[in-house]
Length: 140
Image 1: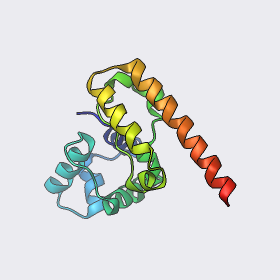
Image 2: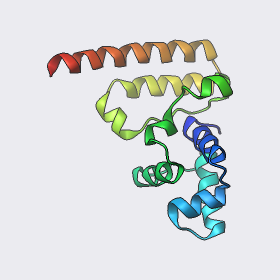
Image 3: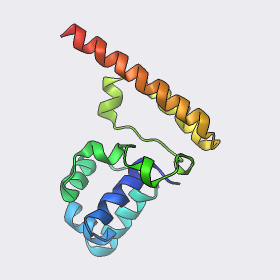
Image 4: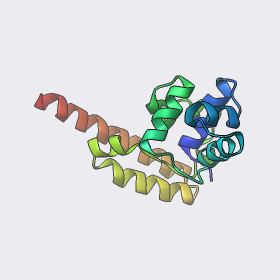
């Protein structure tokens, strides 16, 4: 199962010139076999990293943690119909409670490979987030 986190993790790992084993050793100080297995599970969507592990991965890759969840880079290198699961960081979900519903809808559309619906959900979600940000700014 492909997922945004896994695709980005693999992209930034390769961009850094690291093998799965090397990234796992740098980020988690694991022996080579365990290091490779852990990174492989993250990249293939078999296991989700914890908040602490996300921090360790982003530090090892010298990127911001949010870049692991970004879809901007995927537009040039990945077809939307390849995305099978959308994972949103818990901190972001806490800040935007309505986002959870969009994620559920987007994952359902991804399961059905309904690319037009996925695009519409993303567009609607971004609009809703923008409105929430405006409200937050107006309150401060």
